[in-house]
Amino acid sequence: MGRAGARYLVNQVNRERDQFRASAASYGTCCDVRLPTVIAMTATTSTAAATTSRHRALKLLLPAFTAASCLIQKAAPAPESGSTSAVVSPVADLRPAAEAAHRRVGTALMSGRLDDPRVRTLVPRNFDSLTPENEMKWESIEPAPGVFSYAGADKLVAFAAANGMRMRGHTLVWHSQLAPWARSLPPAELRAAMVKHIRAVAGRYRGKIAAWDVVNEALADGPSGELRGDSPFTALGPTFIDEAFRAAHEADPDAQLFYNDYEIEGEGSAKSEAAFALCKRLVEAGVPISGVGLQMHVDPRHWPPAASIQRNMARYAGLGLRVEITEMDVPVGEIPGTLDQKLQRQREIAHDIVAACVAVERCTAITFWGLTDRDSWLEDPHWGALRGRGPHRALLFDGAYRPKPIVLGVLDALAGH
Ligand code: XIL
Image (cartoon, rainbow, N blue to C red; front, side):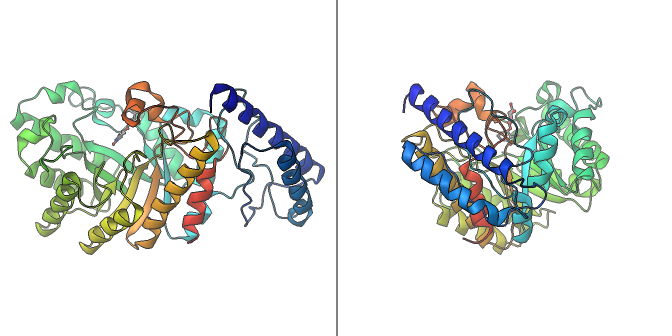
């Protein structure tokens, strides 16, 4: 579909939603009780006749839900011109669905997003777990030796506490977004700085962070199965990981401690096997590791099947570890077809991955890496290029804060369908 086609589709969706809103208003529906049933109104390349019949069918259904439904989400703002995602409406919230499935569902945010009232409404309704997208990373939180900058992280922690959400800490030891001063230290000094950093940051948030990504992305891409060559921590030798976990545990004994990485989701690749071997070694050495974080930045061009992901989760569970999906997004740019087909495929992919987590008892949480398509790190051309051509539309809500079909896939999987 070309740009003109996409624009037509968007206009079509907006028209349908406006008609819908008018119908809902005429029935005086309230928004305080959640609709238990999800009705999908996916945007398709529909004919006018199909649109009319769908509209009519929904009109017929409306009176049945009048007392206990919210046909238009309270948080849904007026459509923004130029927004380009198919939307579903109405749709149940994710948080209660995840609670029913005994799973956490999370999002990652920059603290500045909390200034937007739409974010403050949408997030606690849909998520019970929060990860700082950037503001707990070393370069942000300890930009100079012993100089800490906690304001952004504190704002997120306070918001989570006020809304009964748990907090994930991300991340203590990572080669990327590492403060330049630390990167340039010789190995012995870097080791000391690492331990100090962990003690300071994990200690400050003691009791406030449920789970820390203690070490992030230590392993190399490709076939080596080694620690990555572009990390200054690698020069410390593999036991820097053990030390980092021990320091974090001392600083916050009740926090769950995770090893977190990408492209370790399915079985069989050198990196995935190396991650499993690493976690197994840590468990056997008595290092206080609680779990593994599978980032789940899906690349639809080549991604392991959900069955392989599930088996991988299960073998970590077999070590006594928890598993969390920590940074999920499903970019659609390289999925073939029309916008609607891309979004339906996104829905299926997300469904199957969440279902894999639901099938493994110790897979306890699913965090999405951002809230709306506009916030996604893949909107940055530098990062987006990792996933081929955009637009990626990788997240649950579109730029106008409206739920996309992917939400239905996640809800279905949480419900065991
Ligand atoms: C990303 C952030 O989303 C971006 O804003 C930032 O510019 C780069 O980092 N793996 C991780 C995350 O563990 O911390 C990364 O977050 C995405 C990949």
